[in-house]
Length: 361
Image (tube, rainbow, N blue to C red; front, side, top):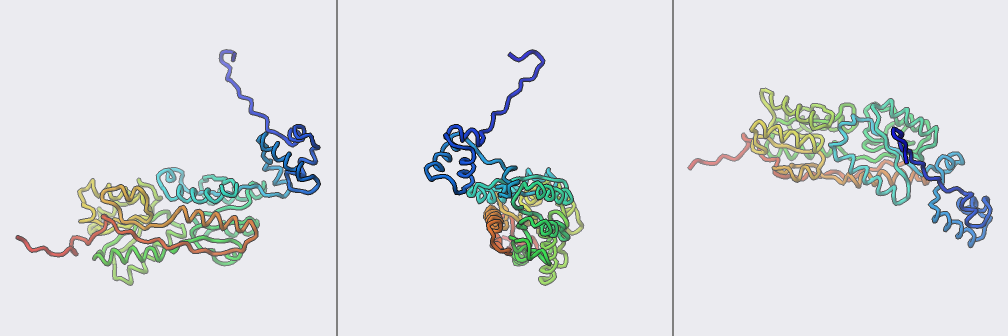
């Protein structure tokens, strides 16, 4: 019985060791070491018996010891340098990690995931993981316009796959990349809206400085100029529903508000639609809305949101497989994922001025 005021303590179970396996299998510890590490020196029958006993005892190799011996850690890392409060509402990373985990699990490779405050903290974490041999390689997300991570990882010799932008310069020879053509995707969105008759379009973008944000903003300017959309512009946010809603309010307060808004994720698009509803602005009769990433939110919202559809889990699977291929000695590659396609739904329609005239009576 635990004395009053004392906190009950739980003694952790003792992990099985090579000595335990040797004792139960009736062999020497060196024979166990040879068998478990796939080295010659023991008969096949003894090797099978040792593996059977190890499985019965629930033995697993010590990752720290494996790292010290030069073996793989059996783990890859993923660091996310974003505001933590934005992660719980955005489905993109959940789907991405789901795809990553699917591939890693098939090879019994663990995923070490950590959220940090900024890129400097991420770089420091990469250095520590490398020094401690905690991971065999890393997946890098949210590439920046001026990104210190590729150069750092190349200098450390830590295998990496950058997700979201093709590598440039010297790092292109050291790091594999998996990316999607954001410029072409933005062009397809503007072509759809222009075809409906929209001339005033605003893009509610994500975090400034991210490579894909900059590509989308640049593509908007280029395509808008080609189509004669003089009023097209972008505003940046942190991807959250709160900032998406606040940006929408400012946009709709303009003397000449847009007739269409393109949001960089599903959460902001739904928040924007809610702001329009609060103000009595009909979607799509008075305002068209497009979400960059499709999700269940886009499909259950009324009206259903026009969205760019892509296989985000497949994107994660592609990146994870490329990293495993690099760890197996494969070449550095730049892989372009399938281009997202626009799925028109009920949230886009011709603007009021472009609607066909219906004679009275």
